[in-house]
Every structure is written in C-alpha cells, then in structure tokens.
Amino acid sequence: MKGDTNEQALLKGLAHNDSKAVETIYKDNFNMIQTFILNNNGSYDEARDIFQEAMIALYEKSQTDSFVLTCQIKTYLYSVCRRLWLKRLQQMGRFTGSVDGFEETVAVEEDLETHEKRNAEFVIMDRALNSLGEPCKSLLQGYYLKKMDMNALAAEFGYTNADNAKNQKYKCLMRLKKLFFSQYNIGE
Amino acid sequence: MDDILLLDAIERYLSGEMSPEERAYFENLRNTTPEIDQMVVEHNMFLHQIADYSANIQIKQTLHEVHQNLLERGDLNEGGTLSTKGKVIQFFNKYKRVTAIAASVGGVIALFISGLAMYFSTAVNDPKLEQLGKDLEVVKKNQQYQGNIINEVTSKIPINARLLSGGSGFLVDVKGYIVTNAHILKGTGAIVVNSKGKEFKSSIVLIDHVKDLAILKINDDEYEAIKSIPYTIQKSNSDLGEEIFTLGYPRNEIVYGMGYLSAKSGFNGDSLSYQIQISANPGNSGGPVFNKNGEVIGVLSTKQAQADGVAFAVKSKNIHSIIEDLKKSDTAFQRVKLPSKSSLKGVERKVQINKLEDCVYFVKAYGK
Image 1 (cartoon, chains in turn brown, cyan):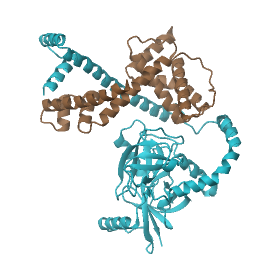
Image 2 (cartoon, rainbow over the protein chains, first blue to last red):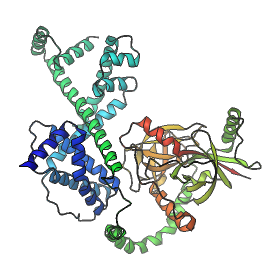
Image 3 (cartoon, each protein chain N blue to C red):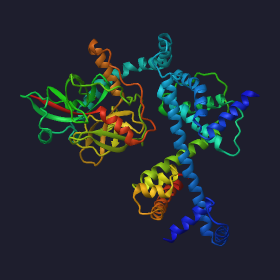
Image 4 (spheres, chains in turn purple, blue):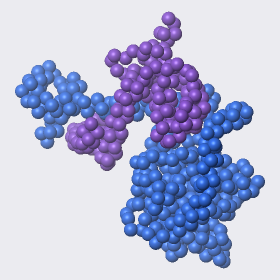
C-alpha cells in the first residue's frame, strides 16, 4: 500500500534525525494532539512538551534493531500522548476523573517504561557532565557529542599537541565514568 | 598512566582502529584477563550511553527548530485566533468542575481567611528571615561609585529625594511594566536601571504587601520597548528538585546564580512561596527565578537568616493574580498582557542569559 511505504520512509527519516521527515510528521500530527491537550485542561506549552516527548519516544523506538510499528504513526503518537498526559494530570493533581478524546489507541505502556528509564539515564549523564567542571566538560562534549577531531580540539583548548589533549580527555573520561556509574548503580 | 593507555587501547579496539595483529593480541589479553574483559564491556556500554545521550540532545534540537519553523510559517497555531465562542465553551468545560467544588468549599474557607492573613503577614517580619532589599548605606555607596565612573550622566532621582533601598525587577509587559517585591519600595517612588546602566523614571502602579509583590511602570521618553519578552510566567506549580537560575543586582552589575527548588512551600509552610537553594544577597530581592527552560517560576524575596543558601521565592502564579488586580483597578491598565510565548527552551544557558538580561532591571527606591 502506498500509505504504508510512505510512513515507513518517514520513520526511517526520523530514525536518522532528518529534519524534513520530522517536519512532515510534526505537521501531520501536532494539531490533533494540541486540540486533545487543550480540551483536557492543558496549555499550549504543555501540548508542545507532551508532543515532543512522544516524538522522542517514537524516535527511540525507531532506533532499535527489531523495530516494527504495527499501527499508523498517528495512532501511536496519540496513544503515547494520551498516556503521558494522564500521568502528568495525575501528578499535578489536576486529574478530574475523565479525559475526553475518542481516537483509537494502542498499548504503549512497555515503550513508555523503556523511554522513562532512558530519560533517567540521560539525567544522570547530564548531572555527571555538569559536575565535571571546565575544561573537562567542554573537552568531552567536543569529542563525544560534537564529534570534533582531536587536533581541532587541541587547537581550540590551547593544548600544545593532540596527544596531550587526548591524555587529558581520557583523564576527564575516567572521572565522568566514575561519576556516572556511581549514580547509575544507585538508580538500579 | 597505565589506566590511560589501557583506556586508549579499549577505545581503539571498540572503534575498530586496531591493526589485525594488535587486535589479535588484545583479544588474547581479554581472554586471559577477566578484569580487562570486564573493562571492555563496561566501556562499550558507557560509549553507547554517551552516543544515546548525544542523539537525544540532537533530536530535541531538531524538534525545537521544526516547531519554531512551523510556527513562523503559520502551520501551527498557539493561541490568539481561535473563535471566541469556541474559547468560551472550552473555558467553561475546563473549569466547570473546579467552579462547582470551589463554590461549595468557598464558604468554609472564608472563615479561616482572616486568621491565615494575620499568620502570613507576620511571616515577613520574623527576625529569622532577611529581606533581600539593599539597605540605604550600601545603595548610597554604590550610587557614589556609579557616579564616579559615569560622571556625565546625572541621576534621575529627584534632587531633594534620598535613596532608600534597592533591589531587582523584571519586565512582564513590553510596554514597560516591571514586577518586583513590595518590600523594596520603601519610599514614594522608584527609578529602574537596565543591564547597560541606563536609568528610567518609573511609577508605582500597584503594591500588594500580603503577596510581597509590586508593579512598576516605566514612564520615560527615553525608554524603548523591546520587541518581545522571551519568557512566559508559569501558572502551575513547579516540581521539587527542578533546576533554577536567577538574575539580579546585588551589585551594580547584573549577577547570575543557579540552584534548585527545595520545597513547595516557603518559610513556616507559607503556601504563597517556594523554598529554593541558591546563593542570594541583598539586592537580589524582586529578581526573577527561572526554570531551566527560561520560564519565570517565581520572584526571589527573602532568605533565612541563620541558614546558608536557603532562600524563598514568591510563586509566579501570584503575578497572574496581581495583574488581574491591576486590570480591575483602572481601565488604563486593561491592555496589560503577560507574555504568552517562551522561546528559550532547549537553548544553551549562555544564550538564554544573553536574551534575558535585557528584561531584568535594577530597582532603586527613593523618598523624601
């Protein structure tokens, strides 16, 4: 079916963080979610938050090797948003007993559990990185996040050569690892 | 040093940069030394964590950009142009339950209000709390100091008036409305100074001592309104542990501070404010407290005298209520509108501050 192959292509694009694909999915689905959130006690900002969270969950799902989406993107996003929003309402104590919205839903609980676990890991990593201090933080960000070349990093930070920068990078990495795992293992 | 060599070897092994001989040697080493094997597994997992973390940041960035693009092109709508009828119905549906509950408990609550009001209003005068407005001497000294550097600029404080206290404040409407603490405004008037050191005349348009909030309006021909305010004022409560930051004027220069939200109520259970962990100094009073997305969640007001770093901030939803009070007080204020769009989410802190500092003002109160 044409619709199916189209959706497959979009998901592939999303998996590679292709902004064209992200934009298409965004445009096709955001308004539905916004209406849903606004009709159920939410604000514009909250609608954006929830929708983006759901997009990230879909993105993470698309990264796994065994990835198959057994329903339409629209249904999946709606199910995730509905779940997330119910949870948020309950946390804020604004839950009034019923949520309006009659779209079809699929089970997403398992996916959301993995998503939450990953979010928790990212928070730990974020905290670990931020407590490293400079120049460690920027050095590691440059190498592992911005994927900069060791020579370029040495020049930017003012190390005399790439080997020295590399040495420093490993020292920082060991500290980061220690910080990360100390938190990570408590979390488990 | 050995650790570093080993780490280097593991990283090259994992990324496939080793030559076949070296690889064979290393694999042999892995087989015979369980510790090294364990390190390889651990490091592999860690590198995956970093890669995922990096991917997460990138996808968030993409989503943010896409959202902004679609908004600019008008493909998304974030309020303003919905039909009024729909809005009213939506509003009614949204609040009908709340209204019903509120009405039924309203009577009971009314009985307690007078008692509570007494309780709260005394809280600020408690000797254990320090208000963060600057005292006269400090401000005076700063005033002289400032006079020394920019001696050509004459202050806009009236000649026969004395400077009484100082603090911080921030814009809530581009037309020049500034929110600050009521306790800073000790005298009869105030001037405000922007982050570039320029002074503007202003008048006090509303003061609420119970909430410890006040609104100033800049009345100065030299004031040029900025295009838009980059933050929203949060209506809902924030969560414990949320990362926060503040900008204010404990000195003549704007100062940044960072901390976290440590309790959902203020001093002695005061439900109008939050307890926050941040280093605050006299002069920080009235300054905005932002969450990590750059949205205002409170107004920094007092700190606990005997404890280090414990400060209190008036919750931002009180700003919404005093703006309502202001609108009711005079038809001239009908058009005051709180900012509706925040554009600082997912943006680096340095960039956030750069955008925010134009909206944070140094407030100096004077009297006869």
